[in-house]
Length: 141
Image 1 (cartoon, rainbow, N blue to C red):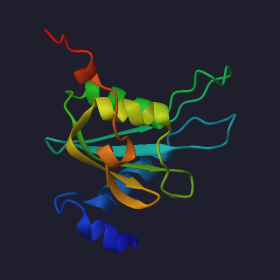
Image 2: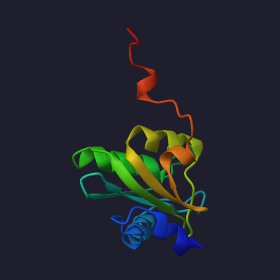
Image 3: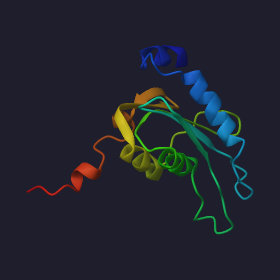
Image 4: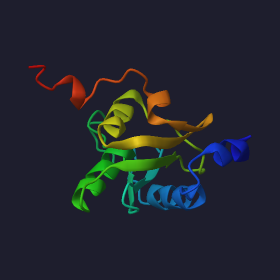
């Protein structure tokens, strides 16, 4: 089933390379409390690869998600927009971003951004329909 989903995806996305980059990022995670390392990787609209891993701390609630680290990496390496995203756990299984991280990814998405999900490849609009974003904050005058 996953192969069929990948066949319907944008032909210019190398999903295997993105998966490998997410796994590599996961290996750098700092997860001594949850023991749940996470890695994320994305291609930007201009073809760059950015990645991130989760970074925990003793207060638990202030843990930095892999998606947050990825967006920080995006900004630190020239900014831009994300066109394809992949997130994995320590076994390399696909993870869905939580609501907070979906919102963060929505903010930095390119038009038609795709995500590998537990259900196969989906667009950002499918993952976060009717999203609130910067367009909702514009002055209507």
